[in-house]
Length: 100
Image (cartoon, rainbow, N blue to C red):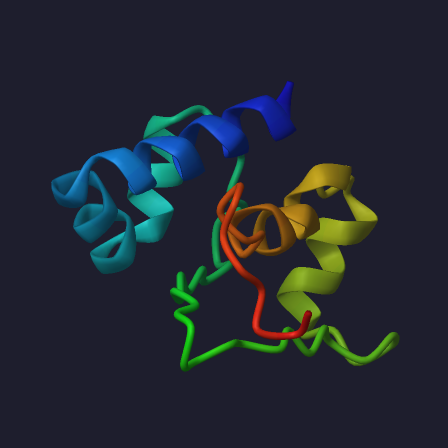
């Protein structure tokens, strides 16, 4: 269910420039409005890949979580939340990946 919502946000951002700008400007509000859980205190940064610029996601080192995030994880942070970056950073279908 969460991944489906993430996919819908991604597809809408590709199709609607105004929505994409809102997502870039205030990702937490846009994701929450789409029904995607973003825990309080968690920042979300949306970046856009181009043919000339590719972002490499460097996840937090295991055991290096901030206290607030650690408490949320211990309290049951949704499993799919960490996948948002992967899903939203996935190349557009049919797009040429600079790595291949």
